Length: 253
Length: 248
Image 1 (cartoon, rainbow over the protein chains, first blue to last red):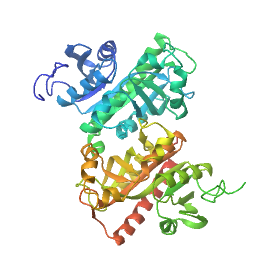
Image 2: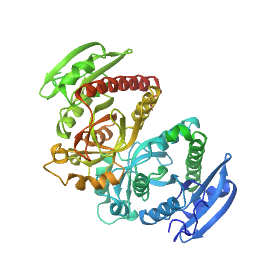
Image 3: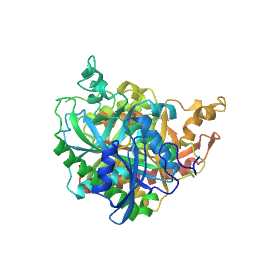
Image 4: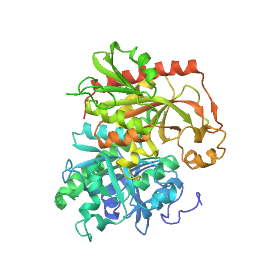
């Protein structure tokens, strides 16, 4: 299984560069490969999984879209690990849950509330969904170097996008209150499972998100402003993948 | 301003930087590594000393054993002004490759305790503060010491895991050993959960004194004392490093 063409991603062992960005959106994968990678080449395309290899600042990197939700994200990361990939950074959007966070802000994720279903099949809920500590540290340093303002902390991952949005039925504010009170910065759909699988399969996973809307004040980011913040998040993530390769010994000690 | 309920300390009597061992009897030795240590209070399992380290106001407060008493200690030192805390203590190793005297720097903890559940639902992650984790790693490397960084497990019992009366404990904990959990303690998961919610920086520095896989003690009491001395030194150096680096 591990040496064959992967069932869903349609890629093979060692054909995908081992340092991978994980956006949810197919279009964002294309954007990253065409605007940020040099010598970008499409490796495979099947369902919601589009994979590109490329070069960023002379180092091999890759991008693979995961689709929305932990179910498809778990398939993506499992098959990428089977292909030999070892370093992953999710780049995506989230809804802000904290009054500290403004729309357009960047969040470097240190851990995730496991409100998803996929990670429960791997291990009981008491097990923490924690980002790799080295990834968090480098992401923060790269943001600081570029003078990019960020928040670092816990976010919530869940499976039903519309249940924690103004479109939800019933009192969605009441449902999300506990997370605002416990200091959760935002809500999204993939990080917790990626972190749990990262810890179980001994690969490093991080996440950097852009707050695209705010659940408390209902503000929504304009498209051009989202692109601006997202490009910053992508740069921080790409720089982190490069730094991990330049100082590999330091981070594997 | 009166004294805070259980610790019997007043606001401002402890420093921004606090060490959190379990055992009140260790506090005197730990405070011995401060400059001008002063006994602040002694009540129940809580003993507090305050002193200086390289110009920083530092304190040590014992938490007692287990998350219920550790949570009280943490809440009360936060009330008194603590900003950066490191739990230092012992744990039971769950991986055979960890050798006596090697350090464990938890990045997060499995929440098998009861206390943290009253703070946040079980799916909330108990994570150590990244800045403290990295300060501890940096100082350990400077001293040439081997450390493991990763997930540990915290629960509310000691003998259910270590007594030979409960022989299925290895089977029960297999789920965690398979998931690369490094070792087990009784305080970290609650301390991590509360520190995030209360918005302070907290991490743990542990060593393994027993092996959960074969129920055997792996270090002597004399060695344990030596490890505490070393871990205190690492924590104090980490505090100094955190104070000198830019805070975010």
